[in-house]
Image 1 (cartoon, rainbow, N blue to C red):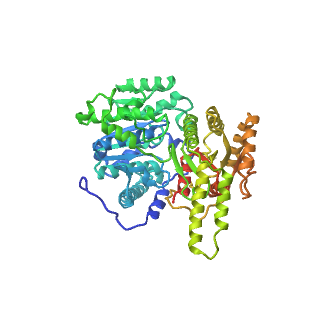
Image 2: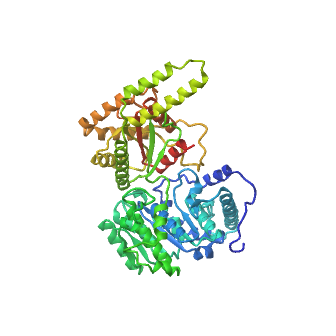
Image 3: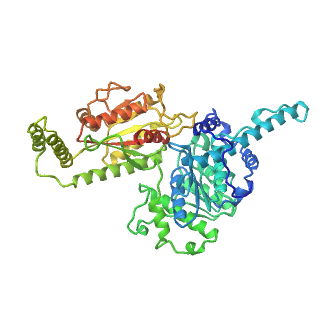
Length: 587
């Protein structure tokens, strides 16, 4: 196939059929299985050859980023900066929240369904056919004694899900002729599928911490060693300030590879000329600083010296500022009002979504959430108050309705409008009662004893206390790649893990029983519930719901019954949970 030629699907097919085929690549192995620790890594080079991507991969001008937390945000900032510098960009991140196409962004936009299907089936069918042919060859050769023992289908398997998606990203970015490809490592670094890249332009390592320890190791040193696996001999690399144990390992690995590893400081807010970063949270200034260094180095090493030679210590090019302030990344410090709640008639329901799932990221998430809700509270207090009392406004509304003759349709219409205006005035004139709710779930490989106390402690240090914690299983399942469509029916789930999470939360609450009891009593008065659903009393500090839609329904019912309430719901612990909530609250 000629360079740059755009393929079309071999045959018309539905998107759901593609998702079924993709789901067939999900392995049943546990995350700590040896196959996740580099076993058969060299098969990636074999797959590249099958897909005729060896030369194409070398031609891509790649920015490669690893890290425990912040690597996705760093990639997002880098892509936005270089796109605003006028380059055609390709961005590969993981996981997706709603639709798998989110993982592949061209010029800042998810790949279209038409293009996705074209490249998906081209790669899938070629791999499927070739792997099957090789299997037959091995079996046939074994029968004729060419091998000492019979080979099995395990010799040449189809690539598992993430490896396939990585190969698909290479195909997409090559065929679409992007100027720059920004790749986020999926897990670790040394044996990650993205590390099949041998000639990146520049590498970055974002903040390191404890995560995926069953695979990467149980110390920061071991984890840093795996992340440093993306470093390539002689290729410049950047990192941020790290814990000493991790930094020592990074520096040692870099030295052995003759890599100039530089530590970059967080972005100075003054360089934004009064504007705000597109991604929320103080920690994003660390990621932005790393993205700036990666972008300048990419520009310099690819010969775009007109921008690369500028001194960015005292000022930033306008394109950089625009890229940093326009960046967007779903599910990371994201605030979304529920579109199914009428805030003119009901109370307010606002979701604060962040896919934090490690102790360090949970602390960062808690700081962001606390700052955001306290800022909203201050803004509400600053609203001008009207002189009429709440009682008088209610009396006025009743009087308007009483004085209108029931058969005077015009007058009825006018009275309805006037009543709505008065109700809106009533709502705006009275201060809303702000209530913080936690909606939480995490994978069973996580330790809730590390996550939930960290979250509660950090929020409490900012004088933010959750009135209730909700625990519910995710809708998405790990054996199937889903789409944006909601499931027609929610299957019954085993709630044993959610009940474990609830016990951890309740036990943590008991350690400061006096203060929290006051908070819970307040909730019992303000948030009465008569649904009778869930795994516990709704008047307690926590509840387990048998499904996520039921948890969302309870939140909506609460604000509809309490017009003076604004529920500020933090959704965290799992990016899968965040994606499922987004499906439910967006029209």
